[in-house]
Image (cartoon, rainbow, N blue to C red; front, side, top):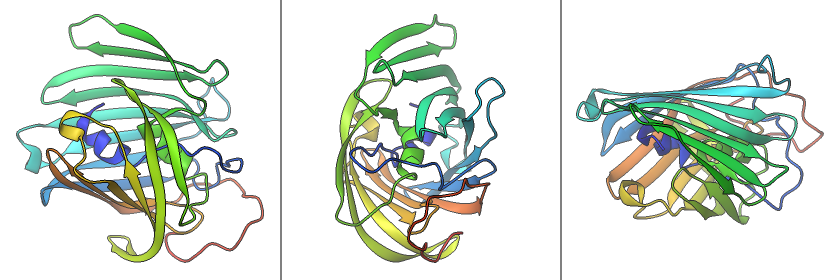
Amino acid sequence: MPQLHRLLATVAFLLSGLAAAETTAFGPGEQVLYRASFLGIPAGTIQVTVGQDFPDQPGVWPILGLGRSDIGLFFFPIHDRLVIHWDAEHARTLGLEMWADENHKRHHLKLAFDPSEGKATLQTQWEGQPVVQRELQVEPGAADVASALYVLRTHALEPGTQFVIPVVTPKKQFPMRVVVEQRERLQTPLGEQATVRVRLTTDFAGNMSQKRDFIIYFTDNETRLPVRIEADLAIGTIIGEAVEYHSGLRPAARPKAAARTGVP
């Protein structure tokens, strides 16, 4: 998976064994801008926007991610685009499509889930090469790492909760261990936030292999917005922070406890 999107996508994972999910934390019109740093040097940005229904897929929202590297990564320029197909009614991903241009090497990736059959279709193509297609058997509720970020936002994050969840990547499938640790007040570019700290143990290999668990901070309110990501990888330390946030048209939620203060 393209490098810059993976810096933020590694925060994503699928929760299982919880109460039925709802797509109420976000909706069409939501836009978040993340800024990443690598070894303390500005590395790039990712802008994520939730769109209106696909014309031919009522109830399915496009979630568009645009990744661009900064001058700090002049030696490895990145220009990526990703579209998630989000099934709002069932709070799940139907797949994603990605166009990557990294260090002047281009490739296209498409991953489509068939939840009813427990299968996924993966297509990859590098510039100048033929399309390679594979059929995968996947675990119930499986999701790619980018889409699963939004699945997580549909569930409550209560400290003390632990999960082991199935993750699908272009190279492998693995269970991701998730621990919801504690509530913390955190200073962020969006101001001081009431957050929930979440720890992830992954099985990425190569440059993306982790020296220690990933740490992600989500706002402790109904939006459950990821505002900070900390990753200590084989290639170095990466920090991602939300620097701009615009709420969308969130669907009405079922009655629940009042949300805590922070990002609206």
